[in-house]
Image 1 (cartoon, rainbow, N blue to C red):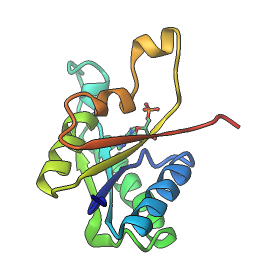
Image 2: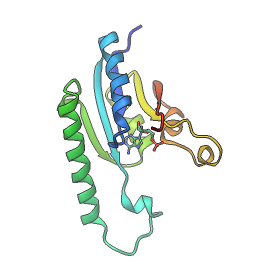
Image 3: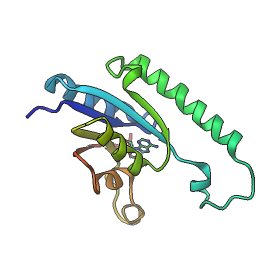
Image 4: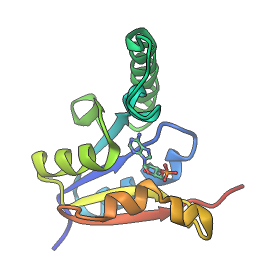
Length: 145
Ligand code: AMP
């Protein structure tokens, strides 16, 4: 059965290019729709939830910056039209799974650094997304240049 809707999780770094390109190849060969998602992690979450200052302005700047970068990606990859691009706050695993279910995606594509040793113990988004995923997950190996 060909895939019908592919969801690409992008971290908005230059590393997302090989991930999108692989997903785009698959979308062409399967005749599948292509969607992109980026999750902005709440700053308070990154600091452990207990921050004695107002982070809302910084948080808004972070969100606006992510939106600009996502818009640039849409220009570069018009297959993922604006309607199929999602920018949301939250925890990547939870939000990616939620969106994949909501949009009836049958494949999630993420980048993977092939970590080992201590880095593996600390975990990765690719690992995280794999666990409990509502559909297939493809981890595109990212090679450090
Ligand atoms: P990492 O394990 O954080 O190095 O990220 C590996 C891959 O997870 C990236 O190539 C993306 O596919 C995905 N990813 C990481 N962070 C995010 C994010 N904030 N939003 C969406 N996808 C992400």
